[in-house]
Image (cartoon, rainbow, N blue to C red; front, side):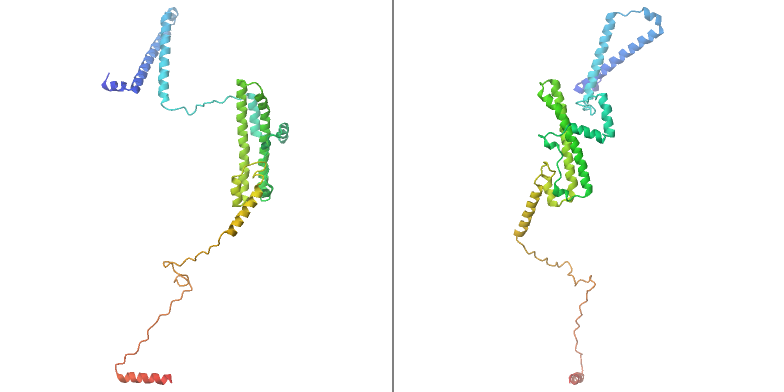
Amino acid sequence: MSKRSRNVLTTDKGIKKARYEGILEELDRLREKILAENSEDERSVEDMSDREFPAEESERETREGETVAKEISEATKEYVALLGADPTAHANPPEDIHGELVVRWSTYLKKGLTKEQRADIMDKYPVPENCSSLKPPALNMEVNACLNEKTIRQDKFLISLQEQIGCSLSALARPMNKLIESPHKEETKDTIAALADASQLLCNVHHAISLSRKFHISPFLNQNCRKMMEGREIDEFLLGKNFFEEVKTNQAVLKAKNELKAQTQKALPRPSSSRPVPGTSRTYLNYRRPATFVRKREPNYRNPNQLKNSQQRRANISR
């Protein structure tokens, strides 16, 4: 064994790798042995019928082959584990649905129910009185007056979806009531858990539709109403039972605030020296160039007679 191989075996990975390679060599040896025996059997078919292998030797080889295969499988699992978890593996693999259910559900999902079928099913499972939240919340009258016709039709369609979900939950409640009152068995618990999960998802869809209805009507309200609408809880009305009264109260508070607030006079901004003052800048069309002041010079008279004559002429002109 070389020095490099001895260094590899000192580590855990090196030991595993050497063991894995030894198992592969043993498996190759057994495979070659089996192939050699098969080739001999094909060449002498008649002799093969007369040959008899000892039972103990055959069992020993079988056990050795199983042991080698088991060791290879364990070594392979160790190396595969280093790659991480299998992303395609499911913790809870889905169970197959009964064939009769698949046929019917696939048809309903592709084509839907007729109006008569939908009405018959909803009549069988009305919403119970002690759980009125299953009903779709009504749109506030004050908000309805602010919407256009298209938005009103869209809201009615979403209400019809919520009505179907409410009847679906009513239908699920009937077997759940019987199972809850029955003796607690393992099968009963599993059935109740599955029905409860289905009902939770339906309730979440019901609530999501209510949020979608709010989203579509928000553009028709002012900013203050939109802020108040965001934090309100849904009851029998989409925006709450006392939404309009709270809006009026909020408007009165804002009005009183503006009246009581001190009126402060804003100081006029002083023109900056770096910016041109309008009306004096040369970039304006009505700009006039200021008149140039020219100092009047007195004539330079070198001859005294010229100065005297000039003063006399001025005196005559002034007369």
